[in-house]
Length: 118
Image 1 (cartoon, rainbow, N blue to C red):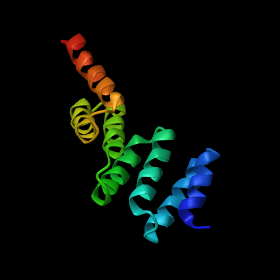
Image 2: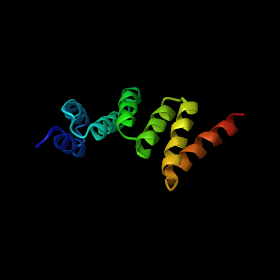
Image 3: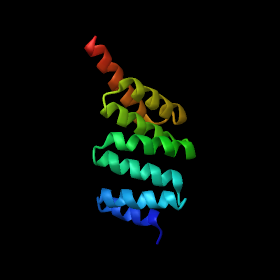
């Protein structure tokens, strides 16, 4: 079994730290590079370590422009209270997948937050 698959197994058992290490090894071996970076980032998100997820998501996007990668970048920035960047990434995700209702909800939450604070 390869590192990527083992990372998925650890993720499924909620052993996120071990999964991160396995995904990093998968990336180093060029095994599902974009997905390995993305999955490691999701593990950091699960651990509420958003600042550690950001560079992994940014590198994953270099390999594959996927709306969920951009969505999670937006989510991390929103959790880090950087709404300007969050809006950029949520909008990019929505442009890539206009059927994604979660993007619209996230954008609306941030915009409504701006209106309430004005």
